[in-house]
Length: 130
Image 1 (cartoon, rainbow, N blue to C red):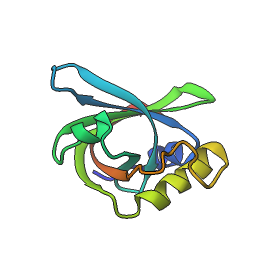
Image 2: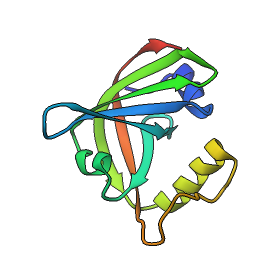
Image 3: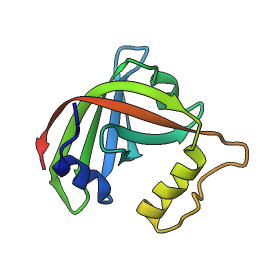
Image 4: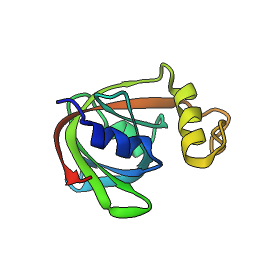
């Protein structure tokens, strides 16, 4: 499924997301995330070793709710599957996201030995008021 222009527009704004995956205890694990897109997939960036990174195995179901900070009733829920994880380009991507969300092109909350990973989410269903 391809993301339509309304969803892409919402992601391109400074909209925040909440990603949900099922944890080993059977309960949803939900975390706030910065969101991006390549026009076809949802993209999130996280540190290697975080809970969401460990849960995000290829093929697992995942939901991402994205809401506009100036109007939280403008939102979208993307249900999909983790397509892949890669460390390739993750450092550059987190700096791009930092510029979008903080105005600073260097991500500041990084420990010296931290490795980053990009998680690509393939959308299967889109629901929302966008």
